[in-house]
Image (cartoon, rainbow over all chains, first blue to last red; front, side, top):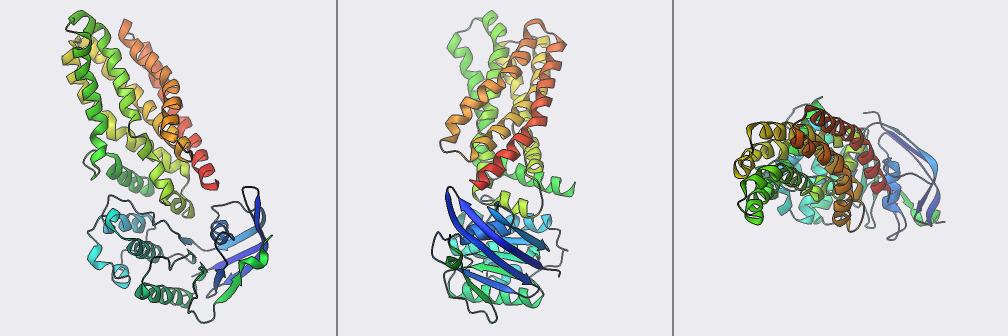
Length: 194
Length: 219
């Protein structure tokens, strides 16, 4: 897996407010970065800039490898069953047809025939993680991945991230909760507040 | 091509009647309700019905295409689906082009069938019915393109649906003029012009809509 994510001197403006400036990071295979900071300091915006979904006020982002993003929205069709909704993304990502035990890993097996609209917040988060897992992306951008998850789910996220890094992937996580991940770089975004 | 087919299948599951979404048969039912009510409203004057019926079918078709407007783009924008497409390098323009096709497939073929019912109710002659069907066949792709374009434009705006109606109606005027106009003198030229307007809208809509989706994402 080829994965490299470099951000240089990123500045972010929302409306007429400059949220942060001068943020830099260089992540290579196996690296993980945990971005912390209070609500509204620009963690999500930083992640969306890294994903190329938002223009940075200044600075450049360089990426090698495919991108996977988890945020507060699951991006799963509400009226399809969980399995149908996940299969759409799986086919779109053209992941070779090995029957990945993704649903079992995330404890979603019993929900596969349930329409997405009936899923709870935590189950949606697990479903989004299932989408990410079957995407096989090199760079993971996780925006508050622990929100809504129970203790078991939080353990699973830690496992998944560790596995992803072991496979040579890169991971950026925003969370105001402590993360129990060995060797993760921590970065307080308020240091770059403008 | 594989991607386009996947998108089309997903969109049809969302929009086509019987796709697990009860609201999707509404355009057809709405169309039928209008054409059934019209003879009651203007009275049983056969000559009047035959003369004006075609125009009413056009208005009903236009409103039927407009009905699902709030479901065409907004849900995918709010639930992050467009972001996930962007991450995978799938352009908004491609997504919206497929969506126009899916929107058309979900209302137009049934509407053409329902036009046969309308023709019977209004006592339209064979030639009029032929021109009505050909006109709708040429015009409904334009209505579908217009619907998706407006849906994308209003997706990032508060009080969007009301604005959608205001934007949709004037832009649909050329289609109605040429489409319904073909019924007056039964001229093929008007059908060709309807088709031309449709083509222009179909060519423009994905780009206008794509820019709108990107703007909404930045907002």
